[in-house]
Image (cartoon, rainbow, N blue to C red; front, side, top):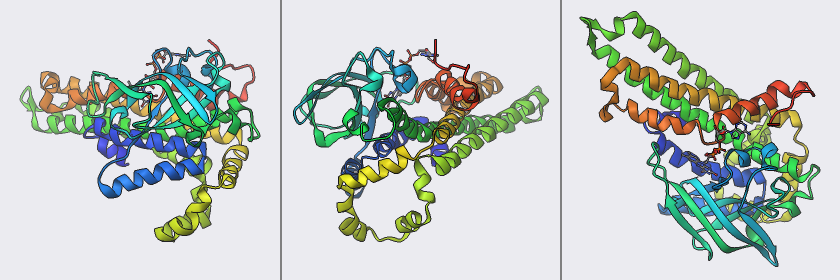
Length: 396
Ligand SMILES: Cc1cc2nc3c(=O)[nH]c(=O)nc-3n(C[C@H](O)[C@H](O)[C@H](O)COP(=O)(O)OP(=O)(O)OC[C@H]3O[C@@H](n4cnc5c(N)ncnc54)[C@H](O)[C@@H]3O)c2cc1C
């Protein structure tokens, strides 16, 4: 709801905050408890001192966008960010582009590949902090909307990342029950099931913002001697916009319900965990629980539960619903902006009416977090075609 509320006013601001949680979700989805403890403590410290410590997620490369968002496609992606195994860590070379919050984040969750010819089996997820030798920022993109949230280029030039900052790689995946490719898919699905629901919230917010602008305009503006709100065609347009907001909201609420039942937030449904987090004072957690976070055993246990014990139908459900919400709400956002502009005529084009800003902002939502085409295919794969062995998704 918070994302919807923010996006109803400014999707750039909503994304500035939302993308940080994409970074957070990525660390959490790897269930690397030691690294989670380290990076999240930096973030909490930033909150206390008023010096924000944001986290970005860097996957997209100049030659690979959609391909690296979907495990089925990664195998044929033209990736170029290479993580070479050396003693004590990895040396990274390559570039990432269109990374939201890149320039304003302190930590960057980086996806690189140990074998560029076999990316599906060799993804390496690393936590990179600003100031690491060999890591620098390139250009900031001049994009059509969401200008409050910078999209950055990240450059890695013989950048050494030590083993303690390796979030997930083949060595770690070997300890899991499933193959490297399947475990990578679980990590990705945990992340996008949460983040695509969030983008669904953005889409709903934009749809609502455009609807509210149009409604206010229709209630105050006369056309042909009577208020616009009393013209039947305008009433139909407003009803359509209202429906778009309501359906979009239901889609992300339903997705979050699926995440709570079968996805990343499942652990919170376990009553002892729920009450422990709710009532345990922070100093006690710091003193007695924190040391356990750094034990390899803790990561092993969480990965056992969250990876090995997760059923295929669980991640199909959360991933499928997340895709549904993402394209339903973001398409509705763009559609409501168009309807609002049609209703407002030339007035809608003025910057001070805000509808044209909503339109520019909303178009970006259809592209990131997997384009809406990709999300339709993912919904097909997860929820429609799964009962039909002859149905093959992502084959072209
Ligand atoms: C504002 C903004 C912020 C972003 N933030 C981030 C970020 O924080 N981190 C990050 O890593 N990335 C980020 N991205 C990148 C984003 O995830 C990619 O733009 C997206 O994955 C699409 O990739 P692409 O632009 O390379 O398009 P392409 O992959 O080149 O796709 C072009 C077109 O082809 C279609 N297409 C491609 N492959 C297939 C296929 N197999 N089947 C069907 N259709 C296909 C696509 O749907 C699309 O219509 C951001 C992008 C934007 C615009």
